[in-house]
Each structure stands twice: as structure tokens, then as C-alpha cells.
Length: 297
Image (cartoon, rainbow, N blue to C red):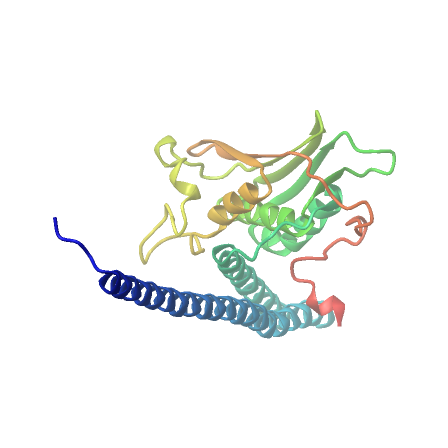
């Protein structure tokens, strides 16, 4: 058996020590690169979030000015033709604003920026303001908007801990769909109530309905059952996917019952979430979240 001299052993130890040092240096360089990459990713996410916020304001503010001014103009003029044109401007600007807001919300959800802000919410105010937003669209189609409440307090309010803005986005998309797919002379009704500390909301319409085989698909992003260049209904297929994503975020559920040519019922269930007692309550303020920038100026 060959023996190793002390000098050979020391040389081998030096070699392995140098290898360990080089490995540590390589690990240190790699770690530095990972830290730098993470910093750039965080910076990119921050820039993307700021961009979304800025572009949303840059687009929404002038659109809301157009909506407000068109509505005001329609109430001032006595000429039927001018009033009709002002009404068309209002309707088209409202539709564009609504669709763009959905696109921005979808982008926020994709980026992970749509975090819930839980507070004590007056659900009645959310419902009333949402229906007010769609009154002009519903009136143009001859559709009646109504709501029914169960379990209100002495002041006629339904208080529930959730995210007020996200709740209004959910309700707005459901009402928008109900109005879009309802026929002239029909009714869209919102029912809301508290049962066993849970908030239950239903949006009912008497519209074209949905076939059973399509009920699961309607919550997929960009899915539209009415497709092609000759489709009869507007939209980009984001609304119900946003509803589902926001309810998942709020740990809520949604179910749908529908029959072709009879109508649809979308049922939302929300469970109470913990909230800060000092948070501002969404109550009589009304239309605070959608189409509100004009009022803030």
C-alpha cells in the first residue's frame, strides 16, 4: 500500500481548499445575481403597478367628464335631436368606461395587486348606486330595475364586513350582463339579505338564458357564447371571469341557474371577514367606486 507523505497531504488539502474557495465565490456571484434579478423584478412589478394606476386615471378621468357633461347637456337642451345625440354620447362613453375598468381590474388581478380591503359595508348603498349607474342603459332598452332586501336594520341598511369596491364590481358585472341579455319590457331584480351571518345576493333576469352545457364555460376568461362578426351582444368576455376571481379573493361563491328563453339567476354568497373597527363605513355615500371621479373634482 502506497503511503502519502506529509507534503503530498498538505498539497492535496491546499487543492481542495482552493476548490472550496472557488465554489464559495461562484455561489456568492450567483447569489448576487439572484438578488439583483429579484430587485429588478420587484422594480418591474412596481413600474407595472404604477403604469396601470396612472393610465387608468388618465383614461377614466376624461371619460367620466364626458359622461357627466353628456348627461348634463341632455337635461339642458329642448331640441329632441340634440337630446338624443347627447344621450348616445353618454351611453357610448358609459359603455367604454365600464369595459375599460374591467380590463384594468383584470390586469390588477393578474399582477396580484387586487388585495381585499375589508370594512363594514352598507350593502343597500352598493346595490342602489350600482342600479343607478345602469338606469340609463336599462331605460333605453325598456328594462325595469328593481331590488328586494331581507333583514335590514331599523335604518333600512344591510351591514356586512367585506370589500365595498370589489363587491360593487361583482354586482356591476352581474347587472350589466342581466341588462345586456334581457329583452324589452322585462325586469332585472337584485335580491339581498343576511342569513346565518352570510350575505346572499341574487341577480335575476328574464333574458335569453344559458344552455346547461355552457354553464361552466361562462366563468372562463374571454369566453363569449355569442361570437362572430354578427354577434348580437357586446362585451369582451371578461365580466364573469372577473366576478369569479374577485369572489375567490373574498372567499365567496357564485352559482347560476338558467333556462334558455326563460332567464338566469346568479347567486352570490359571501362569508363575514375580519375588519378594522376604525375603518370608514360605506353607507349613505352612494356611488363611490364606479364612475365617481367627476364628483370628486
